[in-house]
Length: 93
Image (cartoon, rainbow, N blue to C red; front, side):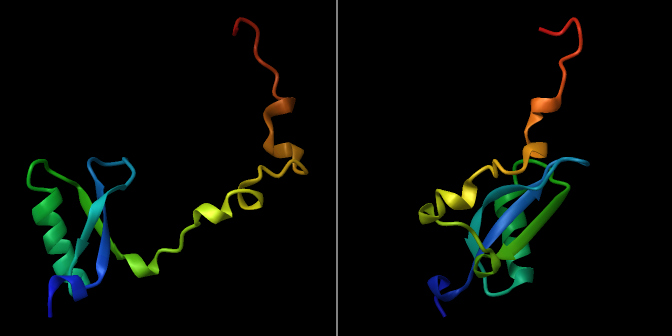
């Protein structure tokens, strides 16, 4: 089995307590355990990390560039989503 036949995994790392997990990169691995070990070797070798997540790319559902338009419309029929009713306190410019 060549590396290109292994599934692609996305790697997310957390640098410190309370910080969000951020996408660090991608790698190929045969299973989740190997993906975690490879992610540790690649992304944690220069700095200490608090946590690493790996998720197989095929399990991620994402938008496509063709979704631009109605999918991302702000929903103008929902006035409560807009800050138009917020009053700026005195002293703030």
